[in-house]
Image (cartoon, rainbow, N blue to C red; front, side):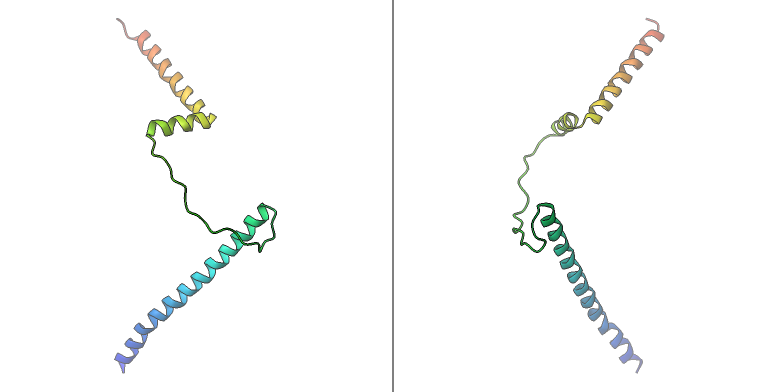
Length: 103
């Protein structure tokens, strides 16, 4: 009898996993419908209007780290400010060191 109980316990595992997976699918479908309704609201369409199927990601050209940093600095004034402050601090340190150190 003890064997039958242990077998019935292990056979309920897949049932629980299937029920959990089914719940996840239903939840994600609800999230998808909600997101579609919000997108439609943003563009002034009825909430149940169909959206076009996603086409995927556009291709991105490979660029170097230096190019990424230059783009970030040019697009973000806070990064440009931080870079200027860093350069200023380095120059101040250099000047301080050169005036203290005898030649």
